[in-house]
Length: 106
Image (cartoon, rainbow, N blue to C red; front, side, top):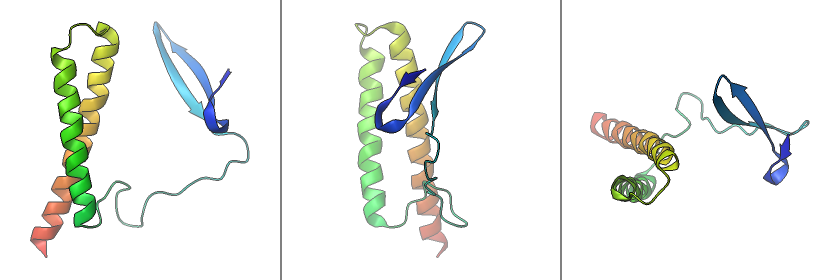
């Protein structure tokens, strides 16, 4: 076990040839509830959040494109980073679509 930042512990879980980092909450740490009743945790609430999410989405898409053409990066790190960015891009796109569909229903 290696001590991580802010009191969290980071451990290594080995399955076959894959190594995964896991985060554990320290004993006695209070759970933080981020979900709102009846709504997904990432749901947008207003136009300001929509604007901020669109800006963040553009930044992530730009970073993803830059990595796609950058051949100097370590290929494994590049591939993993691109996968992570793509997941975030898809998540933000889904949140924007949900918000816009709620606007049009009203």
